[in-house]
Length: 336
Image (cartoon, rainbow, N blue to C red; front, side):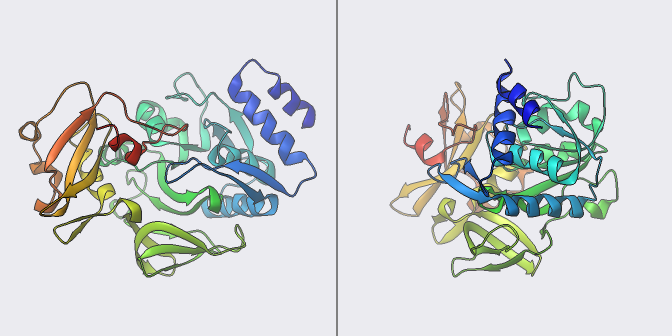
């Protein structure tokens, strides 16, 4: 294994260098791995994750999805971040047959084989819709899944799951089924279901608290506002730091964006700006070279409430984003 990882580190393919470097770190005598957070919800930072916790996370995923020894898996994410690293840990801990491919937009395009399991980000899923039949079970994370993408996934036979997690929880601690073709109409779930040995609660902000002793020694306090259905089920509503208070009405940008995604194909987000009368005014920001007016958008089919309709539209040629490609809302808004 060590010889193989050294070969990867010296490969001309950069994505293989990251894989090799991680395997070397995994095999050393340290009991932890240093991992960078993505920085999508704050300043990127370097944190320590115990290898024993990463092993526990891998086994929980294997148990939940029934992925036993010799599972044929595809790694098409960068090993720079935790999602790609954990695909490698699962393979080593569970004895998978893992195949490596460059983390491109459509990693399935030139592949002729089929796979039992893989993980992707939404932009990869969207580019791979015509090839998803090559994967039996797919977990999707790293960014919200738009309403339009979820609608398109209803026509694929792959069992698709949205995931909830972060670097601090060593990827997902909860999942929900988001398409129905392979099972039944009732298979699509509104609530995330936690993995075994995970307990959830809320703080006084209605934000999710995660007690997962198998993957973290501390109670994890999030900035995610949730609606808890049971001790193992919750609905994600949005980020506490993104909530807009407009005329006394709390608006969750992520929910509004889910509805608007059926109408807008460019990258976009909604946010609030100061307003003398409302306190905050809801606006729509679109990544485009073309100026747009409110009258050009037909909101009728988006199921927006009257409070969720943007009061103004702004366009920007290029959004500010993290190194992993996630939109940085505050930095982008500062460009306007």
